[in-house]
Image 1 (spheres, helix red, strand yellow):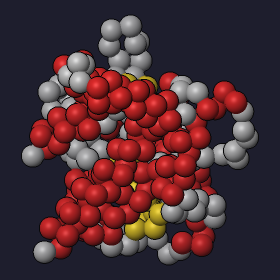
Image 2: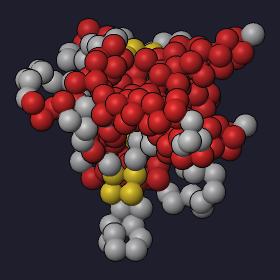
Image 3: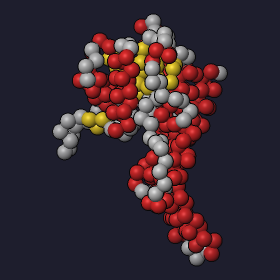
Image 4: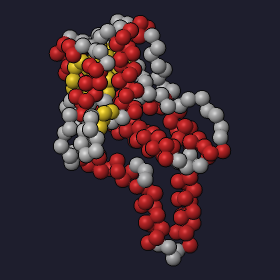
Length: 257
């Protein structure tokens, strides 16, 4: 099922829908309505890949949970759980393992919360691509926290989960083993609604502590109306979250049943 889900994501998320629509137009080009579909496809690409459009769709997700500026407001809690994102193993022309920008911001938020109230940090998330060998992704994230000064005894690795729902299941095992109950859940703000849905279904006690916010103060520019690579990436990630929410509602209900 997990492998099937990875293929479905490739087919549903941009740019594949636009490629399929254009291929459909080429096959049926002699029909008048197919030519109209071409112009409609181009218009959709322009609209959905502009700065304004992605912000409009992303805002409801990022605004769902406010940042936890002062962790004392969430006390008492026993641990901090941070979900992994993109990690970059060494290889090819890459001399040292690294992390993506959103993963850096998640770890930075966990580090900030730790400095204010030192609690064990559970780093949850492992290898996602079922067609490649594991590349020690979880350890790369753990190493960053240790490099920043967090004691090794306070960094707990959970490298087995492949998605957020599996993270909730694996973290629940760790919490039970260590007698931990209430915890701060750190992930990107856009990813927090789906994460809270999964964790609250499996292991109640999560307190949202989102980081990696991307929706800043809006300043209009004529250039923001044009498609851009940055807007396209954020739009794809946003659509991914909405699809994930729908999937997790079903998985949470199945888990409870």
